[in-house]
Each structure stands twice: as structure tokens, then as C-alpha cells.
Image (cartoon, rainbow, N blue to C red; front, side, top):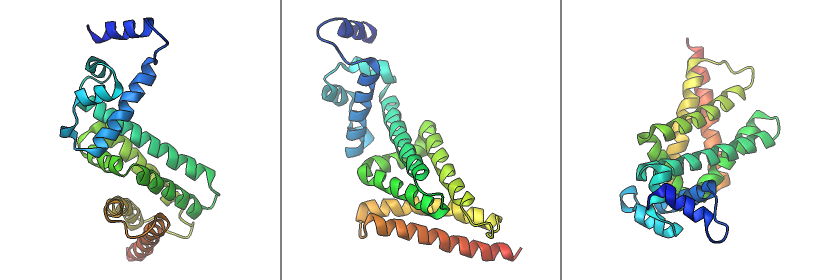
Length: 211
């Protein structure tokens, strides 16, 4: 039985069934959980289909292959993270520093909830263009938030811009170490990240003054 026929028969017989979007979302949810728990090569399409209680042919119908499902899962994680960060920033005060801290805390709360998924997200961004685009957009949005929030007296020189971009890379590396080893709670880690940012900006201002 091909996937198209199976979908039609599933939705036209017996009690009400899940819609296409809901079924697809269920596959993605299961994939996120399994791919976060074990390496990509250790997760099979048979296992994902068995978890969902549906035929494997539906997985191929919706996603094409295992990589398509993997990328769909990472895309969903990235979008959820972006939405949570944007909502936190929009809901905070107009003070640029408080807005940045709210966004950073929302980001850290998300990766605390999905630590393995976040590691997969960063790894996937290196090898999958679709995921990389989403992550690059997220990084650019955070950098722009920082640059727009700088006080008027801070010169927008090249060193300051480089410092902010480099800070983003520091945060991602520090997050992976924090998730692996812990050592401090989220509030203190957030403070560490913000202090590193402002220290880098102060150093960059001095460098820009030398031009």
C-alpha cells in the first residue's frame, strides 16, 4: 500500500483520525526526542514509525528521507527558540540592557529545557543549509539587538561591531560547556555572559579610539 492510499484510508475509516499537520508534528516531536538522545546514525526510521504507531511509508511521504525528518526537527527547535527569545524581549521594559537580559534569559531557559536538542541544533547548523539559515538569522537578530541598545555615546566603530559578533560565538561555546559541566545556575551564567559582553565593548571602544 503506498503512502497516499494509506493516508486516505486512515482518514476515511473508523473513528476520527489525526489530521495531516498533527500527524506530521507528532513525527517531528518523536524525532526530536530520539535524535537528542542518541547520535543520528543510531536512530532508524523503523523506530520512529513504531513510536508513532504508524507505517514507515508515511515518514517517507512527509519528509522524503531520514535527513529530511532530522532537518525538520531542528528547524522546529530553532523556530521555537527564536519565538521565545523575541517574545521575552518584546515583553520587557524599554531599557536596552533589561531587554537584552530578558532575551538572554529566555534563550538560556530554552536550552536548559532542550540541552541535547540544542547541541544537535548547533551541530546541524554546520551541515544543513536550512538549519544554518535559521541559526544565522537568530544570531544576527541578537547582534542587532545589542548594537541598537548601545548608549548614544558609544561609537559604532568596527572594533565594537567585531566585539559584539565575537561575543555571540563566546556565548555559544560557553553554553555548551555550561550544559556539559554546570557549576553555576542560570542567573549567574546569564550575568557572566552580560559582563563579558560589556567588557568586550569597553575594550573595543579603546581600540576604535586609536584609529
